[in-house]
Image 1 (cartoon, one colour):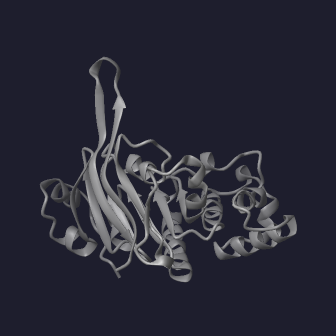
Image 2 (cartoon, rainbow, N blue to C red):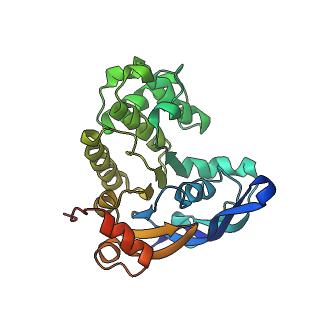
Length: 266
């Protein structure tokens, strides 16, 4: 498989006052390949969401590297943690994120059309407002929403609709990788499967790669072919999802699996 993004020995420490420093991410390494989903799973506080933010440079890493491979030019790579911030704009177009809470992720004063169009203008993907409106309509249809919702505001939408808008905004820049940080945990159970199926459909249509962050093993068993298990800032086990969840080797993974009724992959 062709590597797309590789994290090497990522470390993140936070100052904890008189107690010194807390190492939230402790030497984490993994690779996301083109067109695949790698899930990082663990309990709250395991460091998985911090890792997601380090990958996108939304948080500064204490040490380590994140290599992004330009798949169009072979194995050429750039360390996203070493390049100047002004150069990150080009890579942010290729690397997007979908957050856990769509309500806080969307500007309440910006209607749906403007929210989706914003990255189109930031990255100069469209030349004018007319082209932006046409692209917004295409994106709304792509995520299963009516184009008439472009004039609505976030508070006028359901939670599932808001997350679909966030996904539309993420794919607007035609990224190669989307980091999905607990993208359905804030939604009603009845809506979660719809969003996961949408993400799978978009992956097939657009050739997307996902770094999927979750605490839900049953969910991970449906969306990912490969999983990394995090515990206390470290990856303690990694491998094919089916193998890890059916025959976990690490005691922590064993405890996670035994606590959750898993749904078999179709």
